[in-house]
Length: 326
Image (cartoon, rainbow, N blue to C red; front, side):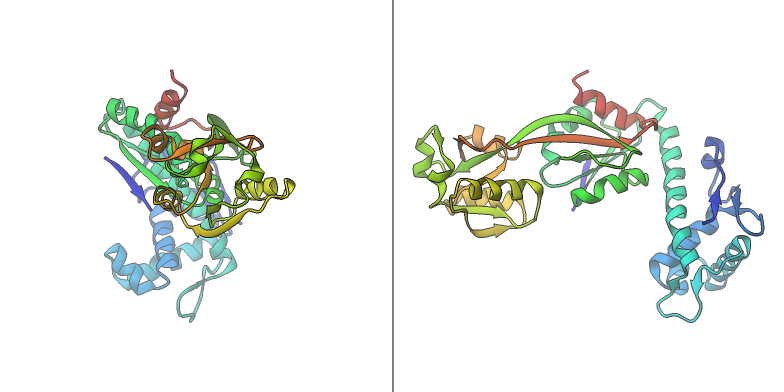
């Protein structure tokens, strides 16, 4: 089934350390040199997320005194207060904010190791977690269909999010892979090109422009464009293109999604410039007409983002293999 979902210095941890049960301990070099365990970090993260010791106790099915004791032990181990006492809701100190970032990485990394060990069974089980925006998902659909056919036991989770947030989620082990239309600058990430695409003009099948094989930008000055309301480099390049050719770009309707833009075009409400991969199905079935614009040459590349130098989980590596056509 595929599910869509709209400092303190840490010493190096071995795989064996991370794969131990939740209560097993690892070394975290704090002021006191005491050991901190993952269970205490999980309690800390839950209190920080819930903003309340009592709600954290309910969430973890423990008593409030047990939660308070775990936080006290953690603070004693690190030699730093983690919460502002007396604040309602609970607020993190600077040390608590710093620990939260590292604790999330450690918990996510522990889950990553557990998942990796499960996947050694030959992809009969496991999970594949992907981050996409509404356009980049189209680049993955054929490969995901083949992946599901080959490995029906693997749970595939596709998380929709802003493109700018995807690299950070990959880096922090919340996602196995992310699909974006740019190369992230972070040197800890690597980007593999999986698709070359371009922006294209689509019009209703009975629109006067639909009869033409090719038009100039100036020919579109009287058209009503259904535009995407979200700012992006591609939207800016289209606006700049029309400005360069001194052609009016009328955008009386701005929609929140590409799907809503496509529906409005099909209803005869206007025309649109969108990524071709997002309208290929509609073009092939005659629900929209693609018309070439002579001056429109805006390529789009879709990249799969992963952690540089890190071994891909088996499911992610298998999806990458399928995308490469191997």
